[in-house]
Amino acid sequence: LKSKITKKMNTNKKYYINRNSQVTGEFEVHREDCTYIFFIEDALCLGEFSSCEEAMSVARRLYPNVDGCAFCCRRCHTR
Image 1 (tube, one colour):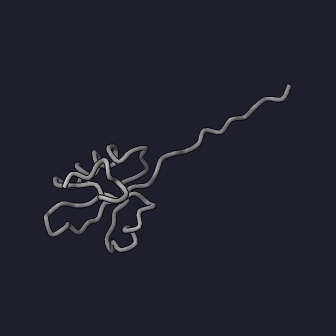
Image 2 (cartoon, rainbow, N blue to C red; image 1 turned 120 degrees about the vertical axis):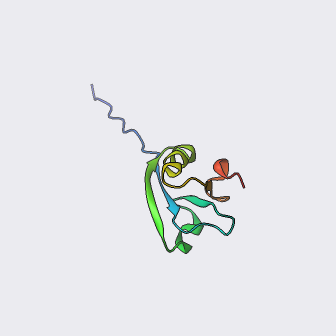
Protein backbone atom coordinates (compact mmCIF):
# COMPACT_ATOMS: atom_id res chain seq x y z
CA LEU A 1 0.00 0.00 0.00
CA LYS A 2 1.19 3.39 -0.89
CA SER A 3 0.80 5.94 1.81
CA LYS A 4 -0.81 9.16 0.78
CA ILE A 5 0.91 12.28 1.88
CA THR A 6 -1.37 15.22 2.01
CA LYS A 7 0.11 18.62 2.33
CA LYS A 8 -1.93 21.20 4.12
CA MET A 9 -2.09 24.29 2.00
CA ASN A 10 -1.06 27.46 3.76
CA THR A 11 -3.84 29.93 3.07
CA ASN A 12 -2.40 32.64 5.30
CA LYS A 13 -1.47 35.96 3.72
CA LYS A 14 0.89 38.63 4.95
CA TYR A 15 -0.78 41.84 6.05
CA TYR A 16 0.74 45.29 6.26
CA ILE A 17 -0.28 48.57 7.82
CA ASN A 18 0.48 51.92 6.30
CA ARG A 19 2.34 53.93 8.95
CA ASN A 20 1.14 57.14 7.32
CA SER A 21 -2.46 57.85 8.20
CA GLN A 22 -5.13 58.73 5.67
CA VAL A 23 -6.32 62.36 5.55
CA THR A 24 -9.31 61.20 7.61
CA GLY A 25 -6.98 59.91 10.36
CA GLU A 26 -7.12 56.13 10.06
CA PHE A 27 -4.24 53.79 9.32
CA GLU A 28 -5.04 51.32 6.52
CA VAL A 29 -4.37 47.59 6.59
CA HIS A 30 -3.47 45.87 3.29
CA ARG A 31 -2.95 42.28 2.18
CA GLU A 32 0.36 41.37 0.53
CA ASP A 33 -1.28 40.93 -2.89
CA CYS A 34 -3.03 44.31 -2.84
CA THR A 35 -2.51 46.51 -5.89
CA TYR A 36 -2.13 49.53 -3.63
CA ILE A 37 0.61 48.10 -1.39
CA PHE A 38 3.18 49.21 -3.96
CA PHE A 39 2.22 52.86 -3.45
CA ILE A 40 2.86 52.75 0.28
CA GLU A 41 6.23 54.19 1.18
CA ASP A 42 6.17 53.30 4.87
CA ALA A 43 4.49 49.94 5.51
CA LEU A 44 4.91 47.72 8.55
CA CYS A 45 4.39 43.97 8.25
CA LEU A 46 1.80 42.84 10.80
CA GLY A 47 2.42 39.13 10.14
CA GLU A 48 0.62 36.25 8.42
CA PHE A 49 -3.06 35.75 9.08
CA SER A 50 -5.95 33.74 7.70
CA SER A 51 -8.29 36.76 7.70
CA CYS A 52 -8.33 40.54 7.70
CA GLU A 53 -10.11 40.42 11.06
CA GLU A 54 -7.06 38.82 12.67
CA ALA A 55 -4.74 41.39 11.08
CA MET A 56 -6.99 44.24 12.22
CA SER A 57 -6.85 42.96 15.79
CA VAL A 58 -3.04 43.18 15.77
CA ALA A 59 -3.12 46.55 14.00
CA ARG A 60 -5.38 47.98 16.74
CA ARG A 61 -2.69 47.21 19.29
CA LEU A 62 -0.35 49.53 17.38
CA TYR A 63 -2.74 52.23 16.20
CA PRO A 64 -6.07 53.16 17.78
CA ASN A 65 -7.74 54.15 14.50
CA VAL A 66 -7.41 51.47 11.79
CA ASP A 67 -9.41 50.50 8.73
CA GLY A 68 -9.14 47.76 6.13
CA CYS A 69 -8.33 48.64 2.53
CA ALA A 70 -11.48 48.99 0.42
CA PHE A 71 -9.94 46.75 -2.26
CA CYS A 72 -8.03 43.93 -0.55
CA CYS A 73 -9.70 43.91 2.89
CA ARG A 74 -13.26 44.69 1.92
CA ARG A 75 -14.80 42.81 4.87
CA CYS A 76 -12.75 44.98 7.25
CA HIS A 77 -13.30 48.27 5.44
CA THR A 78 -15.65 50.40 7.53
CA ARG A 79 -15.20 53.96 6.28
